[in-house]
Image (tube, rainbow, N blue to C red; front, side, top):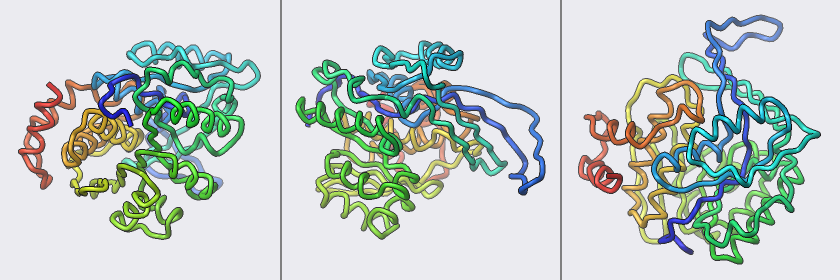
Length: 331
């Protein structure tokens, strides 16, 4: 695959307006909870990844569907504050833009209530074939397989990617692993990169052990697998090597977008031929930084913030040599 090509990364998934509600605790059924502040911003797993890629200097575009409502204008306005290409975003007048209500408890964990809306109505005919002529990668959210016609659009995009030797990356997601495991395994077989987590791999392959899960994925033909381990770090493996990277220690405010930021680091490094430890360090740093703010989208880390963070002293058992290698590659 064209891992040496820095063409656009095409991301296929949802665009949402996220509303973040920091609460002391989740209320019991029939009871109330109160918040001191509410914030709203951009969301959607692959859009988050596209934003972080763009901030690192990697061209990225979004393949998705908005409604024809005020939220669509809000989303486009915020995307225009980045360098992410929104030329391939379509609109559907019959359905509203996706919305997510995110309840965040003091430990940073989030509970989401999602209205996918127009996202589901991204159609096969909306997939821009010409975009694949110069793209370097297609990055797909597993959630895009949950409902048609968006699921059919995924397979149209996969076909275009394969015809043009464009690498395919998949972030599985937990709900797809629970609801459509067979369809997700089918897409894994077409992927060059698979990003997942222990809960997902337990559903898909019967194991939450990252090393065993990685072997399953590599046996399916995946070239690189990244297993997100939350506060424990991450595990990466390809056919020749593997590595574990501990998580950077930070004060966690909100975990929304952390996994998407990790994915951006992994994809950025892979496209540039970095070794596994370097990919892991960048992904872990981006994921950690994402947890230090409320919300995702425009709140996610910039390149300058990432370099500053990597230049600081850290308690995590991460090789300073590897960190310096990433700093040098980013500057």
